Amino acid sequence: MTKRVLIFGQSGVGKSSMINALANSKLPVLDGAVGTTFESEEVSFKDSSNQEILLIDTVGLSESATGTSSSIDSFIKLKNLLKKSTCGFNLMIFVTTKDRITGNDKANIELFKTILGDDKVPVIMVVNKSENLEDCENMVLDLESNQWVTKNLLYIEQVYGKDCFACIKSTSFPCTKGDDLTFSEEEKKLVSEASRRIVLAMINKYSSKESVVLIRSSQDLFSKLVRMWNLFLFKTGETAFKIGIDLQSFSSVGKLAEKLKVIFKADINFLELAMDLYGIGVNNNEHDVACNKK
Ligand SMILES: Nc1nc2c(ncn2[C@@H]2O[C@H](COP(=O)(O)OP(=O)(O)O)[C@@H](O)[C@H]2O)c(=O)[nH]1
Ligand SMILES: [Mg+2]
Image 1 (cartoon, rainbow, N blue to C red):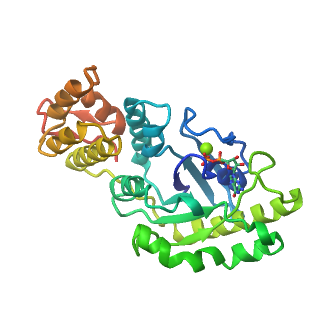
Image 2: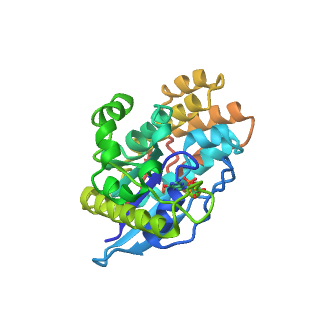
């Protein structure tokens, strides 16, 4: 069985660089410009024990809220992400860097962990770009002994909460361009290879055996959509937050669709979206959404 691993975190933290190092792929790496149009990517590879691993790169809400995508775009992107979740995930990896551990990502983490993952998919954290510029000779040793995380664990736990992540490790995936490092190519290769081993070991150790399929019933689907929608409105700010609270009292997908039409003054067929999301059929009785697909 393929292990499905969802990777999330802000733009520019090194998600694509990490995926490229793990899977030997060639996803484009950002050159400083944040907020470029993002297409969700999937890359699969086999580890040394012939286990197939699928890495799913994602866009976070905070990115599209501050970047170039519109609110609707970011919702559509989330929709596409949820669509993939019909197969479930075995693990989620939150990628960040030392200077971004500020709590700004809390809504994002909540979205992935609680709403998409139903608190059932293990979540681990990777603190990338943790190379030690003063002492690059000992970099590999630093990473292998997880030095930075050990030193800063209390702070990390203060920011995200004690039990937020099943495991936290620091890594470094320097590239040949755009990483501002004075390391030699040889040093870059060594730290990148050590980081690859670290992340692979985390994936092996913390992935759930079975991929967790997140949608079990029509009610499940509906409450997930409403919760996602509320968080989305909250993240994008706007006066729509109030409308988001209203939505909690909706009892059917049809009524939600009506409300969304008013909000966007656009003809988004939410019911169709919901069906498309999970490959489900919707009965005439609008309270009943029948799941055809497990
Ligand atoms: N110094 C350093 N730079 C990195 C590291 N990982 C990625 N980068 C650089 O950070 C930039 C953004 O990386 P990218 O993989 O595109 O991030 P993404 O937006 O999260 O996918 C690129 O210029 C990378 O070369 C790292 O561990 N250390
Ligand atoms: Mg990327």
